[in-house]
Length: 269
Image (cartoon, rainbow, N blue to C red; front, side, top):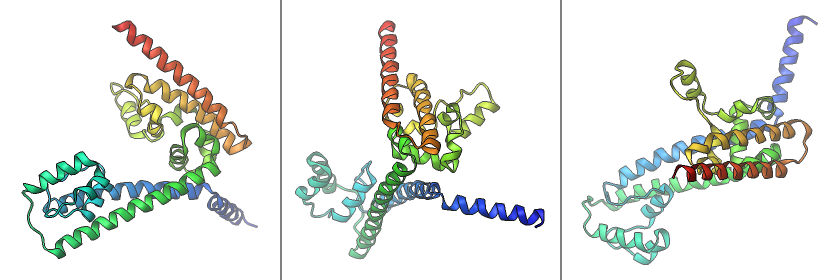
């Protein structure tokens, strides 16, 4: 057999092995959800622009609730009880008052029907995302259970998807895992040293990082990345169940960081 034939055979075997990996499914559903989030946000803005012709005063941060209101709300005959079941009594009273003095244009039944069809499609996309979120969590708990216990299934899935496979992630040092997803910011720092390097990437979505004071986020991210590295190695190679212990260690380190921060703040007063 020629060298070229041997090379092609090995290449085919490697491609087949990669496609058989469950990591590919996890990566696929994670990227699908990211695309869905972008589409939902974009179409949510379009719905607000469109329905805003009819009721420009209506504003909602939650795009799903906005779409639900478009389906149920009749500007000329508001049912406060039904409205309150969706947005609460205070917001229902506010919308009723705004509807009474709205600057919005009158639309035909067909115009409103098209807006509502659009809103219904958007609600369907939210439902699709919810279904995929459950599937993503199930896959993450199957493929990288230790990482999922330490950082949550969504963060674990995004890390695996970002690098392409669990085995590849398991070979990375914690300093790299800490900034995965922040490559653009890292390259800017390397190009211009006056720009501070990023302290976190994807793992910023962990509530103990995003919900903490900015001054300690870097330390928390470093602690979480260190535990995730150990978890990834266990998931990829040993298959040992060590997630609960790693999570306990991270929680302990988090408490120490927050206690030190509180002491520092107390001294500054």
